[in-house]
Length: 352
Image 1: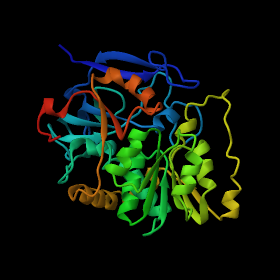
Image 2 (image 1 turned 120 degrees about the horizontal axis):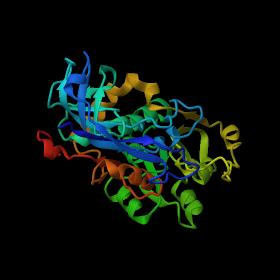
Image 3 (image 1 turned 135 degrees about the horizontal axis):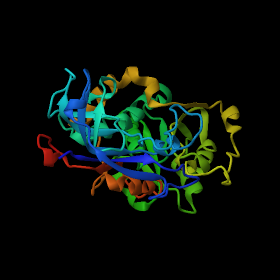
Image 4 (image 1 turned 120 degrees about the vertical axis):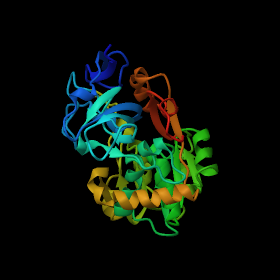
């Protein structure tokens, strides 16, 4: 009997927040098999799906760095999986791979998107969706090419308890910087300081946040990493040092704002002129040439225990994806958010 394959497709573009049961539709069909493979392809069974803030932008019918996900198209996303069959000489049956196969249980992956996972010392399989995947590569390449923190400088990171922000702060510490993290709860702030080694962590939900930021940046901000935009970006602009570098990575505070939503602009953008701020946006793909160097250094730091990571793994299968992506924007996760379709322990061969 043919194996059933579950896949989420985009059913309706969200006006504001993602609505489980409305935004996506779960479809069931026979899974592809080894007989369907062409030369260079591999049949991949998904084990873990990566949930990332950028996914919200992919649902909008607007110009961006990638075309939007089409109505009735499979939801885009990265995954870690196991090879069930292969006509690709780079991978064989049983290998673990990273591939953006989307929200599905079984898929055919062409050579252009598949990467065999070689887990380094101190690493684990799921790191290739986190600290050793696009999340960690974003942090490393953005700092290396735009932020360029120097020893003794002050680096402020918004969304610091998220997957990318938590790595950004730790990389900056390894570069000798003084790091101030911004997060949405006292618990998250304690994790940043006590576990990750941030020098200071501020809860932006407190009424005293602006004063707290001023106190935490007596010599102003040399490097600001923006994951959230909005009022926190405005506060950071107000504390920028002359010639500060602002790394514009995300703006999660506004991702769920619909066309008819009231959106506040940045009122002190002129600080970019008066403080001669270098403000640059980027996408991790811009710095693909640096991936090998980034993975080498991040892997070494992991092995040496110099950087830590935290994962929020949602169990219960692919059905959990549409609920978990909604929760991502409500700040319920600390660290990297993943959906477990099937644990690596079930299929054997992976040390988690």
